[in-house]
Image (cartoon, rainbow, N blue to C red; front, side, top):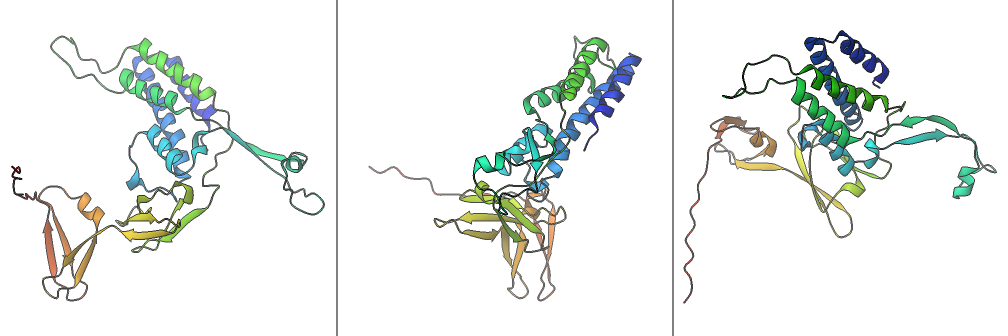
Length: 286
């Protein structure tokens, strides 16, 4: 878990130097710290969410996606306590029985205020981490931004970081998971049952694997796993060639994908090119 006090100490040291360079470096350290806070929580959910299924690369949106699809506790504040005590030799059931037991605190996960974090993360970039594109009226080009604007943003980040007091992070899902093994690499893929829609598309969590799947839920809440593939017929032996869909999603125009038949060893080439279809114009009835 990130030592936030040490990060604040480093950023303050750069602030005290009070040069254009040191303030720019302070802004960079702030931005890296904000990213780390999000990514260390994302790491706790690697077993649930493939990087290939991320809808947006920005730190705030990654945590928001986890909250929407896996566990909405990822950015919330909560405390965890444990007890080995039992009531009359059995596990308590009623709320009053639970509250009467002596607990030992394990710690607290601090709230991550995503909108504020994103605003600070984005603002640092605007004042310090990019050189504005010059225009006819912009005057001289400067390597560094305005010192006072940078300082204000950095001080805002320090204030934000100082409010994060938690001493633990917890990942995973509290409810029931639905899981299956990847067809190609046998990696276990899982999602909370309550997050699965009538149709859910997800990828294998193994970064080296190109498999993806469609999970369909029927009226009885049973699940069917369907591989996302494109089928070809081998020109040499008519064997079905099944290629994961994600291979084609990564292809650029005019790139070639080589497919070797496992039965007759013939090599086929698929070229990514536009395809035009014509349809008959509809004739209005009289």
